[in-house]
Length: 276
Image (spheres, one colour):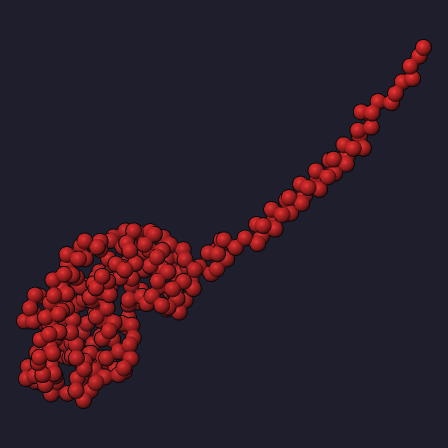
């Protein structure tokens, strides 16, 4: 007795295979689309999307290349310098045409592509070793100043101030605070009544005190203190002393310093980081 052959149920797979392939292709395309959408919407690479500047960071005779968004603040730049050098932001004195402000952006202070940024700073141990006696000297000077009559009334200073304001002195702005100019401060008097100019060599961390006879190149780190006082009757100008040794006898006096540069001079010479 012949048995009727049953159709082979496994044969009609071609159509099913095509369906499976189509579905797999559809899922694959959807997965690729998801991946593409994800990569487009991901905003992690912010530096690449912003306008940047290439800077040359110079610290301790070493040079570092740094690319940073031009709208970064001075504080952000210090953080990036920290990552390059290991020097904590609080220990950094960052120079670009004067002491770089932390609250302004690189665009605002007109930092250009390829600019050289000078960084001065030491380890915390070095700073503490240097600044402990310096802080003590500053406290002693302030205590003595409180006991004395105004500096501009003292005889040793009156003989210079009584000569009057120099004709070629730089213009002053009372109550203003400005960064140091790119040119030397000139037209001022020293204690002997001779003309003196101050040049701040930030890249060498030196203060150049120039007279007609000679120029003294003083390392800023050797200056123990800077004191100043507004001149009575001419409060837009100050008299200022740079203490070059351990006592007041080593003070180098400069008269008719424009008031708007007084704070910048103290910050550059002493450095804000001295108090940490």
